[in-house]
Length: 301
Image (tube, rainbow, N blue to C red; front, side, top):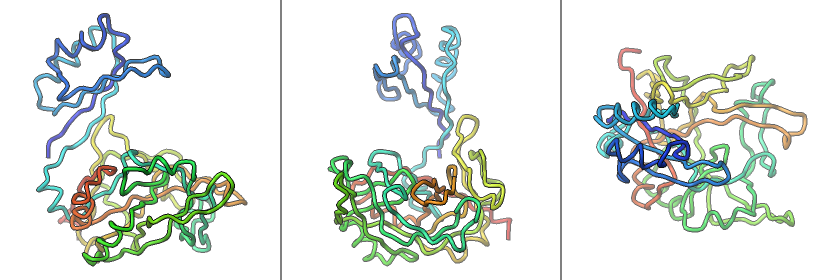
């Protein structure tokens, strides 16, 4: 594992542009991207460096000299061996193939055992429905997710996941809701997990709470990498019965339960899978997810 820092700044604020900073700090295209974003009136520059890279203090010092206050995000870069030997991996959609799906498009949930205040813990009872105007956005992809982290895969990947015998996994259908309200069934499936893991260890870092439900205290989690990387920790005893496909107890995002479910906003959990599940995605050439290993606290029994 290599700790990294991703640095973002606006190159249009720098006399001479982004190259003034990048050239003097020795940051080439291997570590830097520069994109002119007219709608923001910015030249967005991202630089990714290992924390031990000698170019990092040079870059930060130059930005300080030019009065820039960059966004700095902390992350970890894992080797293939580390990913392939992890106990479980967080399956994090990276927005390459992202769809607007959820209750507003007709998805339903059984809330009888959910938190009465926010709906967290509700059980999905329908297929996935998403905005059919985004069908073209799926072209060229074999897997993706909705804004609310419903994980979607094509039939080929679904079949391979069944072939490897992934435990805890079942599938639901996927429909595109067209502008004329027709529901078109796709040759895709939603990955679903039968098991929800116990809460994470308090040793977990890189998550913050914002407006969590005051009744269930289960949601309102957000990644916050500006001070430390997200490192998910579980007690060893809580993983003894884990399946190949699981959901975390904690829910990301806000929740607002309304009398009409279509007007509600529901929070959503991460999916955690074993390396053999990730191998199916890797071998299929899927790049629409970031993966990071959980850590296991062997001392907590």
